[in-house]
Length: 129
Image (cartoon, rainbow, N blue to C red; front, side):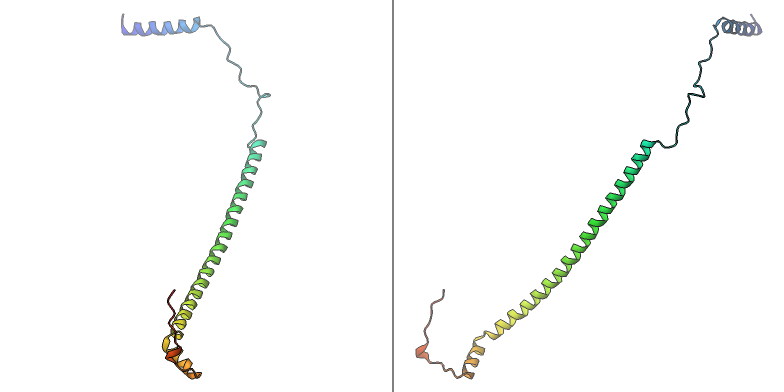
């Protein structure tokens, strides 16, 4: 057999196979009447979107409110720390004044100004606690 004869034989066998196959009707596709056009966004999706939006706005509002409260508290803490530092400085200055005014020489000088005399026989030593 030549090449041409072989090709003709193949073509003939393919044609016979096609003829022998039973013809089937194509499956019916969805009819135009039953095919509904789908809406872009369903009612449930709209509700979910609205709930999500409300939730997002609510969380954002709570977050901003908490940040504002935190900022206010930080300002109060800062002002209190400044006030505490001022009081500590004042207390330090008063302590220095107490130490200066309670020296033995100053007390003896004030006693002399008011007419007190040191009488050694009237001095009693008190034991320390």
